[in-house]
Length: 367
Image 1 (tube, rainbow, N blue to C red):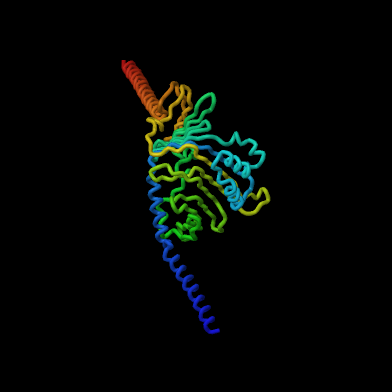
Image 2: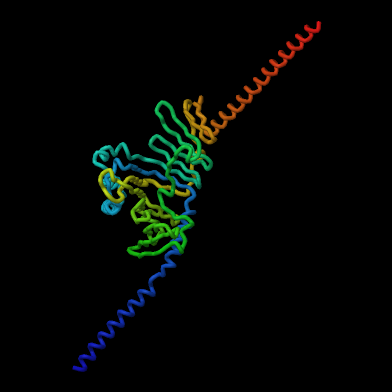
């Protein structure tokens, strides 16, 4: 019996030693969290600077609560996972069918459209659906097709109540506030790094899922202090565009709020937008004058760049509405100056005549 027991003990010892040894190798091979976080931060810094110019063509859908089913965040995630985030047009339509009220989905052709986005540094253009929105580095310019005439708005983003897309809507890139001290790694599974990000000690942490290889954020969740979802964003179908630059073809944004009017508790889907990029060109020269807005002969221009709004109709075509508005403003200024000079001269003549009449009356009275 003793030899048998010794053999069994030896076998158990060998197995236990192998298990411990194997566990030790796994732990030593695992990358420390600090290295993973440092690598992600460096990738995000690179992403902020790697695209100088971009030319994107997209299909886009944006709908509000009246057109949406009252889905929870978990219910929406199930739909997106089952439909693979809408990488094809068929999947795009399938997602719309599953998030929209049936009566509204029947009008889908009216609500989704095609858009073009150009970026060059801080300058950007979004064009589609009878509207062009431009930031030329100084002012925002919005051109709207009103049918009988065009309307152009000039001014700050706040003055003209502008909501436009840019690179941050197509690809999430964290800013410089995201440092190692703000990041907490929950786990790393299947090439995805799951992070908690707390930018302020008293704030609810943001939840991020990041593609470990590229550093692209695939999920982003903002919650309120109770941990309920406020906004969720999803990026998928990563494509390499050359120069080591990776970009998602699909971007989805969902906002959640109260749907108490339906007798439902918890935060439900109230805004849903989805864009699918069909064409992506980066770091190529853009056409000259692409950020200047031309006008037709009869275009209503609302210039909100100053304290007051000036409205006028153009009398001829122009290649740059800003230049035209400046000329118009100068003309009004010159006209105002001319009118002021005219009245000064008239008043001067009147004063001279009145003075001569008074002098004549005095001389007559003395005689």
